[in-house]
Length: 280
Image (tube, rainbow, N blue to C red; front, side, top):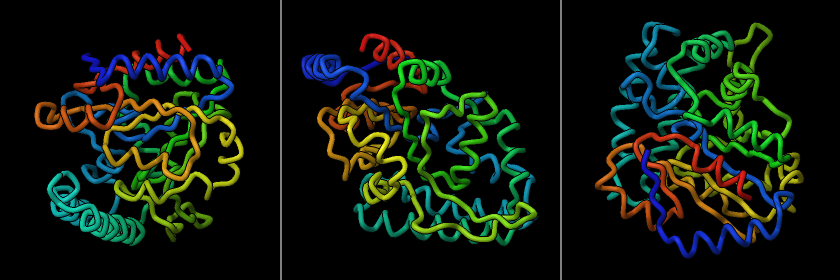
């Protein structure tokens, strides 16, 4: 694993300010897919929980081909740094809406989420489970803000499977309405996608917001520069940003260094953060 510090002087200054205020004034705000989870499992790219569903035979025969069609069209737009923000945002809204409609028409059921979680094809990043133990022991809230196409239910199931669904963990994500048989019948609005996290205000989730509103120091974790938008609307005092640059390192390194205080390269472990929190 390679750790890159963008500005060591600034980082030390930030750490000292956070240490001075104590852990009771701190919370962690994290993306989920490819941040708390590995980007690659057994050499296979694992962009998200949804990718397991897309690559498997879980739903109707038509689902996989249609979902791949959407992926091939819209993922190219998502990763193209030359496309203007507003145009990209519109495309992502289209993609998520079309995909949610497809999931419901293809018979998505809670049992499929369990199958994906138990498939072994999505794994937590190395030392991520230890991070959750450390945060629990120190009473530091972890807010997971995710644009997951399978929503908060699947994330909760993954944590539950590892016995890490602690009461200091809060999930802000897409969510379905389910019928009595466990079938997805509707997606709750607004839809969170990779580009609009800047509009997903923590204040819009009052139960979560009241748990963290006085914890003005934040450690933010994300694998996309757009993940920095998660903090917009929160009145923080000190913000320490840790980015996970999992691939295409040479072409993105300088851009990421300008956006994050610390970078973890090559799908590396979360151990740097664990040591940092122990230090705090």
